[in-house]
Length: 166
Image (cartoon, rainbow, N blue to C red; front, side, top):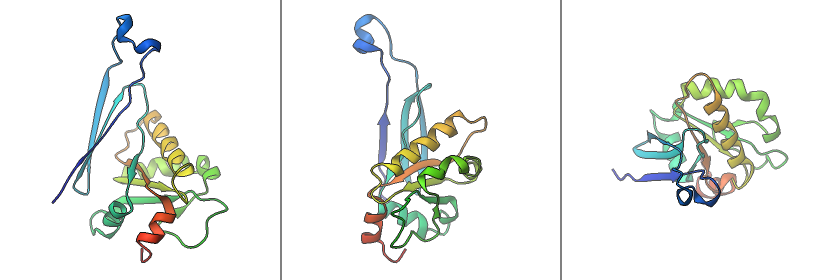
């Protein structure tokens, strides 16, 4: 089985880079999780949020077709007026502007699922913003979430071209 490491780093240094002024960067934490045989890794300062991972259509299809991972994967479609032409099988439609009203449900789902995947038509604006929004709220929550928040790379448009049967 092939695996790879996805590494994202985010360090918020003071103006001037910090080290030039004798300051050290803030302490970092490392969070890793295996998603369907792939180790995902995030390095982030303790006070900053984690960015959502980009998940390819092939990786999402693999999760949805897996007998063990399908029930652990939640797909949220945040398209609004452009919600037409089909949907990913088993996905939930929550228009982007209504996400706030679903926060408690999403928090509960994040405690029970391994992966939450957001997408819009192209996953260039609403999908990533939704993933970032939920990541922030999960980080701020009192109870730990076990879910990794992801964004479907290429969104519905890419999915429809590559996996029309799902």
